Length: 114
Image (cartoon, rainbow, N blue to C red; front, top):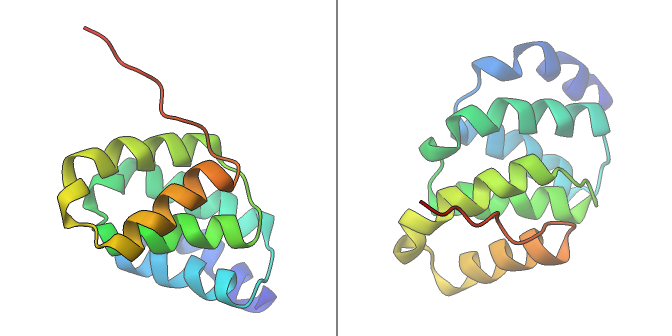
């Protein structure tokens, strides 16, 4: 897994939402911690977070939670991106996302007022 991480980090910015999700999800399923990869994934995911579908959101934050990798900026971005597509989450995806965001080191999203 370390060789995969080493190869992925320099090109992670070229990954689309599915590729990001698949990469980090594999590490989460194997409970393989690689902080540098997870930080690179978060940095790459935030600018394209609106491209993630509900399953990709759930799987991505679940992977972060499984390896106990906290990244508040990513979790804030995910929380805001999930709101407009909340109806597309199935019950399992919603439960996973909420649990990962708030049980895995996340925090409620910042409230934006006009």
